[in-house]
Image 1 (cartoon, rainbow, N blue to C red):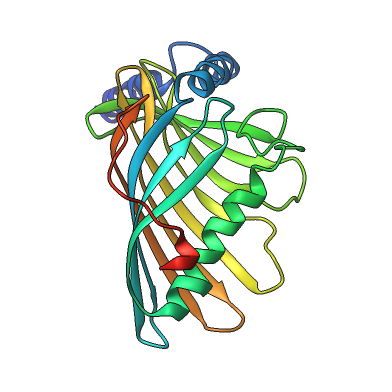
Image 2 (cartoon, one colour):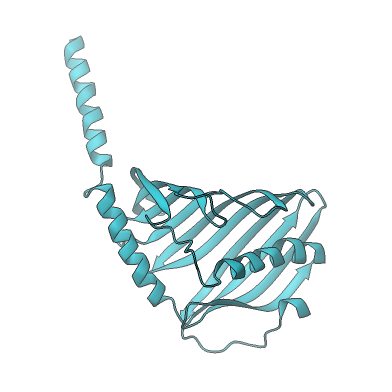
Length: 236
């Protein structure tokens, strides 16, 4: 009887392992993901979306919120047009402003590239799981070099389209005024495109303590119509 129980338990374990194994090897999944990422770069050019940035400095009990229009040019350059800011100027300058400056700095020439690809990261397959009703492949990623902008964490890849649905981790190198940056970036698949949905960041700073930032994206469109009057962030 004990032998039968052991055999039955072993069979269940084997079945579970088989069910979690990808239909194709991890290397092939990464290749498909890289191909989808290259197509994605072309697909999102000339796109725009609304952005709501909510930030706080808990130790100082200060908050701020920026509503802006985010555009991706035909050349892939990202720019922001601030529509409205509410809250404390310290949050505006030390949290939101620094985030926008860091993103602008990171995309200057993109040399060396910060893309989450095998050129910059080692990929380790961690299993097939469900996220928001979709089958997704989960990979652990480790940067090949300790460079600013790269992170150690995970990438979740949609099993049907091979597009990213989530990235999370901790930056391996930060500017001197920061001690630690942890984040979660979520995406949704819409019409064959991985569209930004939300970014959550927790930053440990050396000057003002912990800073929290949540960015929500909406109204994604490509070659959309012009919207309302916009203003410069510094002029708010």
